[in-house]
Every structure is written in structure tokens, then in C-alpha cells.
Length: 394
Image 1 (cartoon, rainbow, N blue to C red):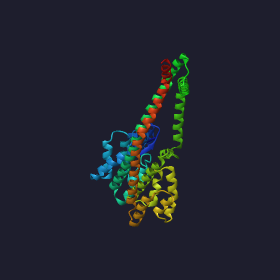
Image 2 (cartoon, rainbow, N blue to C red; image 1 turned 60 degrees about the horizontal axis):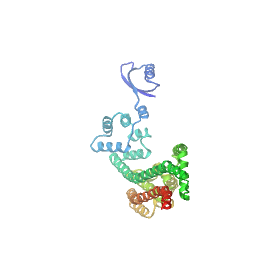
Image 3 (cartoon, rainbow, N blue to C red; image 1 turned 90 degrees about the horizontal axis):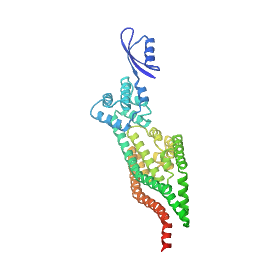
């Protein structure tokens, strides 16, 4: 573990060193061996960051830093202000580490690169390009806008999925309650009466007895399947993304592809406007897209490097439809490819948003009708023998 030590040298000068030691006592002993008299010994900022359990929002960090830079503060002053305002935790330690790196003469992109778990290559690339143009506030503003647009689409998708999921959970719970608790009790009454039941009612009673008699085993099987699914996801998440799984749902795969292409266009456009070359920008965005789009993008990059136009390479690899291709060709001729990429991304965002709205308006009544049919069918089959008995008595 790394420790930061401020100590007195043999000629009474104050010196700061970083030593690797097992604990604070070992760090003091190591300093003494170097003929240093420790004044303060504390765990290094890097070690505190790695041990910290707090959350860190890159979007919030960028927005706050942008506000301070636009107010006239330098980058070091802005980071110091973030450190002072933040409560103890990950965000404060990260701001302190970045400030320390800048005071040691490092560039901001180099300081960010030392914390890859919090700053992705895309973000570092944007900052690195901004350092060459001295337009860090502009780069941060574009990144914040980029994250906000992606967040809006994600929040719409999540909001659209919440109500159907709640309906499925509630409907499934009611169905299991009827089959596992109510149906077995009706079955016992019907068996004691000695009357015959319809074929559908008999099947439902059999299912009810099966669920009631093996409820613990069924619950254990469901938990086991859930654990296996989570384990498989953790094993395959580096090779399969959530968008790849959503592609398996009929009617949703095309919209997932549009969302991925929108994210691709928006990211590349952001990088191009920040001054990053096209090929480098395409390489940086590979980690932000799904497996299929990533594979096609890797085949398109060599074509572009060899001199083929961006629009032609994307058309060959089926990474753009007619409207975006027209925009890209106009951008290539006018030298505004970055702006046209962002326009194409907004076009796809609009299409995805329309689909989400249509899905919400359609899925909710369909699910409610399906749950009503299932629950109503169970209730009707439960009372069918009673209706038959009442008819025979009349």
C-alpha cells in the first residue's frame, strides 16, 4: 500500500516522498531507513480512491468543472474547488489526485489516464484533443450535452419498461397465488363431493396440487435459474452487451440497432468537433457499441484508412440508412462531417423515441388484457363445477 510521507531530511529540509509499505508503522520505518524523520504519514490518494466505496458520476463531475471554468477559474483552481466542496469519498479523492498530478507538471489527460476505472478512453481522448486547441470548456460542454441526450433516451426506455414489468410481476403473483393456494382448496372440496369436473377444470386442479405440493422445490428451482443467469451474464458481459440480448426480442431488434447507431454517430461527431481525426475517433468509440456494430466498425476502419470515404465504408458495412448517408455525403463535401453525424444521431433518436411511445401505448393495454384473461379463466374454471351443480339442482 502506498503512503505519502512529509519528512525532515538530514539538513532540516522538508521533503515529500511516496513509499510502498504494509501499514503506517512500516512506512515510518522505511522512511527512517532513508534517513528521513517523518512529520506526517497518510495513505496516498491513489490508495484511498481504490479503497473508496462511494459513487462517482462523470457527468456531474464534468458539469461542475465546466461551470467553474466558465466562471473564470483555472483548471487547478476548479479542481481544488471541487475537492473543497465535496464530502469525503471517491469524488473528493479523485479531485485531489487530479490536482496533485497537475501540480506535478502532468497534463490533464495524463492525470485522467491514471484513473481508467473512472475516466473512459473516450473522455480522455476528448480532453486530450481539447488541450491542443485550448478549448477545454467547449469539450466539456459537448460531452455533457452528449451524456444528457443519451440519458434522455435511456430514461424513456426505462420508464416505458417499468409499468409492463410491474404488471407482469403482479399478474404472475396473483396467478401463482390462485394456483398454489386457492385452487388446491377448491380441488379438495370437489373431490369430497364425488362429482366429475370438466377436462379443463381437472387439468387446472392438477396444476394447483402440483404447485402446492412442490412449492419449495419450485421456488428453489427459480432461485437456482436466477443465480445461473446472473453468473452467465457476469461471464459473458465482456463479449455480449445488453443491447445484444434485446436484439433477441421480436420487433425490438431494429430499434436497438437504431439506438446503437445513434450513439455511434453522436460520439464520433463529438470527437470530430473536438479536433480528433476520424480514424482515431472510430477506434475510440468501439467500446461504446454492441458486438455486431463493433465488428462491422472494425471492418470499416481499414477502408477509411485506405482512403475510402466515410459514407461509402458505412454503406458497405450496413452501418447507415439512406437519410444518414445523404447527410454524411453533404458533410464530407462541405467539411462538416461532425455536425452531420450529430444531426443523424438526433434523427435516429427521434425514431427511437417514437417507437418507445408507441410501445408504451400498446403494451400496457395488451398486458392488462392478457392478465385479465388468465386470472379470469382461472376463476371461471374454479366455479364451473359449482355452476354445473347449481344447474343440476334446478
